[in-house]
Image (tube, rainbow, N blue to C red; front, side, top):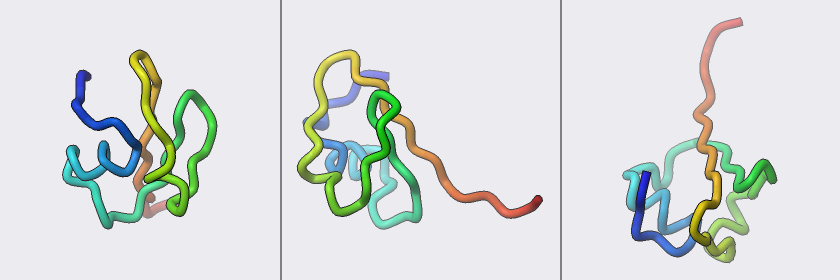
Length: 56
């Protein structure tokens, strides 16, 4: 998917996921919530956004 966001934090806003309980990783490396604004994205980065699920 192509996006215009330049940071992980901005990407979550662009995808309307800001403020939701999600875990994030860029290129397989976990990015904590506190560092999302600092994590800059470059072309071809692989971003994973995972939401918690109930069940077992």
